[in-house]
Amino acid sequence: MLSTGALRAHLLAARLAGPVATPRETSLRSYRLFAARDPRVLLGLDPERAWGERDLLRLMADKCGVSDDPEHVSGPDVIDPERTLAALDAFARRLARAADRRAPVLFGTGHPHRLLGFYAGLADALSAAGCPVLTPAQGRCVDITTRFGVRTYNLDYVQGVALVREPGVRAAGSATGAHTHSPLPVRAVLEGVVDSCGVLPELVVGDHGWVCGAGQLGIEAIGLADTDDPALFVGEAEGRVSVAVPLDDAVRSDYYRPLTRYVLNRACLSQ
Image (tube, rainbow, N blue to C red; front, side, top):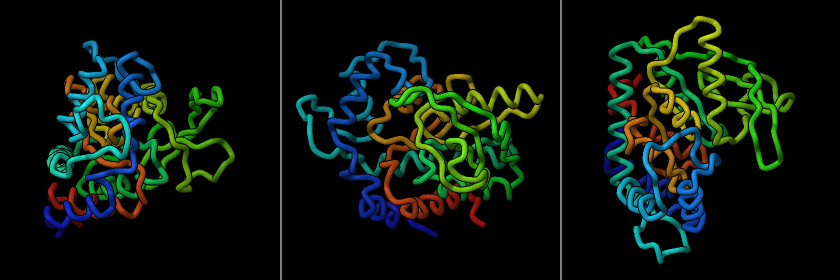
């Protein structure tokens, strides 16, 4: 069993919280783009209210613990580990509720190189608890606009976790996938469910567009988000994302293993 104190120490040592690798400049740029409703940072969310840069800075200070000083424009951003721990507890409660209902769950990540193992551990535990872990629309093509133009990707699942990969890069089932912020993959998955008259997820677990895209469509969604991903926290503030956990989403993949153990223990799903 991993105690709260031990996890707090790990969050700081691994730089998942505290001073993180995300530059302040990157976060502020994301807030400017979000305020301008740039789809690259909206992640599929259509905000109900107008969010100015100052509004976003105050929100991110409240949700993540970043500085609310608009004159603080450089250096590493900071995440309050207490906020991360509180959000992980809320995250665990949502998983426990899904397990109690044996609800169908969809996992998806835009950070497969970093976060696949975290989600796979949760998927395995929920499956063992009787939740259908959904894998619809495997192999479906998704056209995503990137800085290099429109690229076609294929939907795939690894250990119950959805991701996208460029055709021909690796065989289906391998852990290598593409980094994406797009909500189009989760929309394609849900369209695939409807087309096949399958079961819709009652809960989507993931990051980036997987969470915001699902939440925008009215499906309960929870996930992880860095300080330069304001969309998930706006979605939480507006009631379309149930839980957004503030942490650095791009550290070494093995650094997320203690988080998996902590969440499963809190959700009473440890195997």
